[in-house]
Image 1: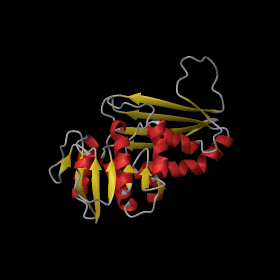
Image 2 (image 1 turned 45 degrees about the vertical axis):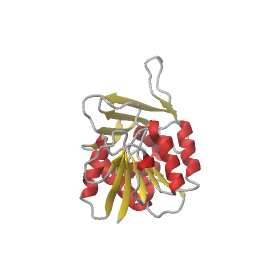
Image 3 (image 1 turned 90 degrees about the vertical axis):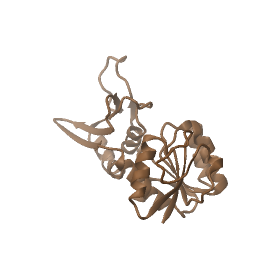
Image 4 (image 1 turned 120 degrees about the vertical axis):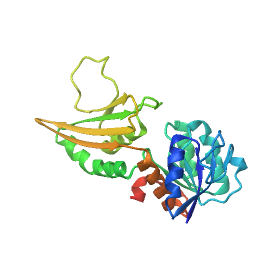
Length: 248
């Protein structure tokens, strides 16, 4: 049994994680933390990390960058492994994560979906060949109209997988440039509208043919499932930086 402290328990993802954990005999959320101090009722919820009294094997974070610094310090102080699901972190926060990984086990992923992480693994294998063969690479991501960051962290993770050798330049907007597409470009486009949970498309456009990899998220359950699998994996691990690639 893996005991979890859920940070961000009052949010949309927190509610989904709570429901899925309740149906999983191998995990238990022992307490939650959120500024609202509200949860499903299946476990105590606190407004601050300092109020937590329960013992947990791992922290799962679905909060936001504004409270992340406090959370990271809490985990280092308590020697608790941390699964980071929060996106939009600053460069300073990312640097702090790398430093904290010297003291605790940390798993960070732009997307907790198993399918997305399989897609990343495949891109690392085929993208160098496709680029060398003259295929143009474009990434299009779509999300709901409430999402704050653009492009998505997942789109950037896909771009990094396709550009592991660092030979391509990311281009986010061509509206101000009137010229042909450079062969060294990797275009990344963001669409925001309605209640789209998340769609990511990687396009390899060649001479007279197009190869497309697409992942569509129909609900937040797949992200919750991935987070719980990550928590099971990370509990008890030695200090270091881990990813969903390790989980799969």
